[in-house]
Length: 71
Image 1: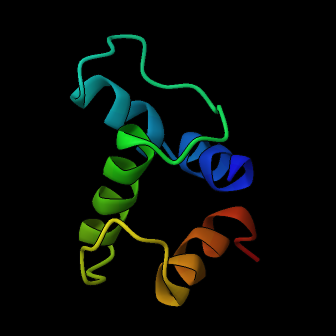
Image 2 (image 1 turned 90 degrees about the horizontal axis):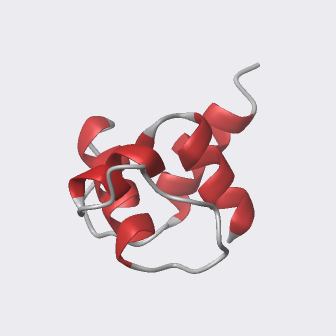
């Protein structure tokens, strides 16, 4: 879970979700798949035109992995 959150943080999704949900400082990597992480995943899915479920399915993992390993 922390790896997912770190990747979402590094690509701006986690911090933006934290702000969107009322935390002006963004979000932290805490290893908990809560509302902020789910919101970040949904935004990533919207941006990459993946069905927006908030769940990290294989297609979503492919996009997340692309951010972790761009080469």
